[in-house]
Structures are given as C-alpha cells and as structure tokens.
Length: 108
Image (cartoon, rainbow, N blue to C red; front, side, top):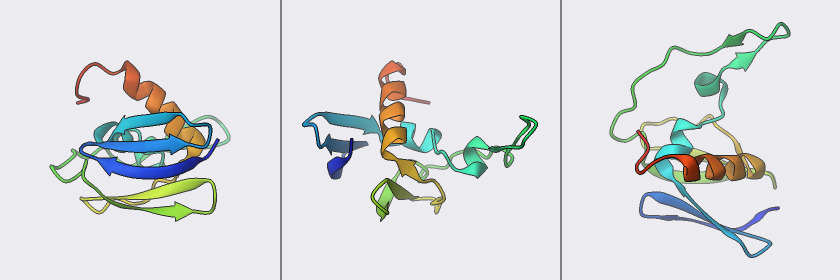
C-alpha cells in the first residue's frame, strides 16, 4: 500500500492511501516513534541494543518543517529542532498510526 497524498493538517499528518483509506497521525507521535538509530537504537548480533542518550524534546521537536521523499518507499521528515535522520516507510507509518490510535488524548 502506498500513499497518494500526504499533507500536514494542524498537528497531524494526513495520509491518503491508494486503497482509498486515510490515516491521521499526530506529529508528536510520529516524532516520538522516530525509527532512526539514534532514537530507537541499533541491535548487534547478540541482541544488545545501543542508542544515543535520551534528550528532552524541546518546543520545536514536534513541528514538521517538511518531508522529503525517499525512493518509492518512505519519507524523511525534517523536524523543527533539526532532527532529520528517520526514514518512515509506508509500513512504519501504518504501524505508528495503529499505536497513535491506542494512545490516550494528547501524547506526552
């Protein structure tokens, strides 16, 4: 499944999928679930996870400046605090959407 349209609407990323369905994912959730190695860590062959020290999110961390397409499989968000190393595949967006629906009220 691939998106046919992506738009930022208020504090959400709206995605229209090629099957006609739509997703609305809070920007804060997208940022908190960033799949990059710094945020989620990297796993070695023995199952150990290594990641950068956690840092607090500033007020611009949840502001989506832009996104860049990556091939035909992902987008790379550029956040207001300069973070831009996460690649959000279409499958990842769908999994984050499912997690976002399970979070109560505003994430945080």
